[in-house]
Length: 602
Image (cartoon, rainbow, N blue to C red; front, side):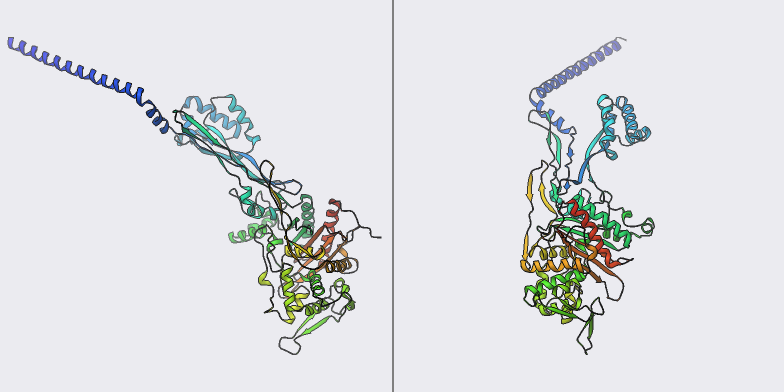
């Protein structure tokens, strides 16, 4: 019994010793930990604080730049970028204090934007770690104003914010669409938007956070730089006049295309350029402006792609055709410049001429007046638009000189207009090595070679302005976002095509076309209008498909406006008159708008 008591006493003593040792160890460890904590606070605090801040998530926000405007010559806004807002949901922020933030936030979003609260709760529950969910895009300020006001008054609305962006807006819809073009994905996809994309595109900014040397989380902001403004040579009012008259002629003629270019002959500036295949650059893939719902429904994917390419292209720059009789004044000018004819020469037209007679290649060319025009002077050859006389003039000019002058006037060359996809037509002209006597004759009255509308307008301007060929252009200047002029574009003289004396005589001949010849329907009351008609048969010359055109100018004594209209494949009525009448309607309105004083016709 005594032994048991002694044994228990020894066991208790051992347990007590162990407990004491553990206690000592515990306090020693606690002391070491305390010392270490004091050391960290005193000596390593900055390092660990920085590490903690570095591990915390910092946000960076892109500050979107505004794309530059496109304006007309009188500062009328044609294209601009308007601020819009994307509604962004941040579930992670909401869930940091779900009880406080969830209900006020989803309720506010439903009230302001119509997104059901159940839908919002589901998105938040399914994406607890997400900080960026786009709920809706492209909201206007009017659509978000109420929400901003509500959010500013209620701090419980959290985890929902508005991201600023910009939307391209074309103020007048389809107006000048083939010149202005459109954007896709924020970049210019066609027209001036494409050609001047680098100037129009701004530089995005950024707002981001970092830890500075004082262990403070700082926010740094680099503001966005907005794009530059492009000031065009277009005149909104002239463009509107042109497009209105084109639409009326298109409806009347059911033509494949109706188009017009108006140019300042003394500078090369394009005042208006349009064709009837319109589209709205605000919705560039919408075909309803040029096709019926039934036509659109019947299109395959490839048909749709082809149709879009067709409406997007600028007919005046990218399409070519034979000029017909509008080329005849050029042949006259060549012959005068080369001294191959004189202004007093006379011609006889019997209605036809045979080439390579008796050979397998025999060919007869005809005047449109099959019975012939009979006897006439040089001016009469243009007034009557005589094929046979102009073929004879071309023959006197000769192959080498004729081809030289075609290129001197810019035919078969790029005009270098500042618009995309220009066609040069170089392969559609003869050269001295392959032009026969027959080819020379038919080229002399505007057949069997192709040109574009902008080539013709530019070359014709040199015929009537004293012989000065200026590069056509559509942009006058580039301005920064503050309105400071960065670069201006002035007229560029490309060549002296003819002498002033030849130019004066050509003008006389063109005036007689309107007073006494084929261009009488082009007359404008009160003005001395001068110009030339054109009818070119298409394809194999055996069908009934034509390009009908008229090119003219005013005022007669001091030309300020050249207007060229073309109607491709009109279907109905007296087609030969349509182009002249279209010219007359356009110029009646344009001359009045430009305050060009009427001529003294007494």
